[in-house]
Amino acid sequence: MSPGLIFVTVVVLWVTAEFVILFVKRSHPATATRDDRNSGLVIMLSLAISPFLAGVASGALRSFRMPGPIRPYAFWGGLALIVIGFVIRLTAIFTLDRLFTVDVAIAKDHRVVDHGLYAIVRHPSYAGSLLSFLGLGFAFRNWASLAIVMIGAAIGIGYRIAVEEKVLTEALGDDYRAYAARTKRLIPGVF
Image (cartoon, rainbow, N blue to C red; front, side, top):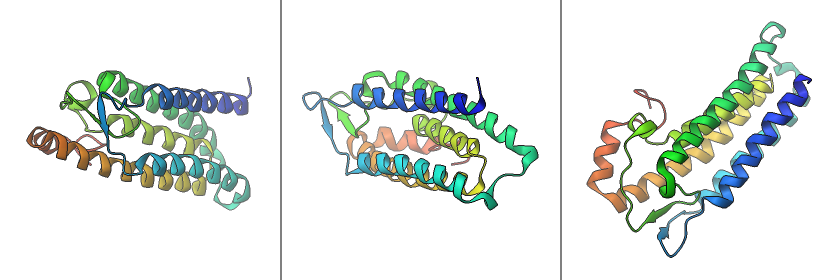
């Protein structure tokens, strides 16, 4: 199988799985209160537009191509990061179980989950997504493409985290504040 076909296969499987999550993990109005504040739209647009622009940039901005000797490592390492990031995201989703929704929603019996990956960072699902997008940027083997993908992902995910944390703090109060005080958002011990 050619590297190009492997790249397409990995990306198609990743995007397909994300679409399944998008449709399967929606909140239900009967059991949860939605408070998305348009963050779903922002995250979807930023995570769709930035990879498209990065793909265009990888072909059009050849002067930003990574040096030849590191290109194979960037490509294969990037594909590995996509898969690792998605596995982290899935682990986070399964840990939250029914409390995980693609829209910002508070279940009637919502509580702070602080075990598994959530004992390490507050938003492991987004940390996994950022790792996948970092991998996608590297797989393009173009510095401009990497920057475009990461800026788009940072905008969408950054806004979503701000919305989620505000909603969770309002809904869960001191329990969430205490959890936030002892964990970092995305990178253990750093941020």
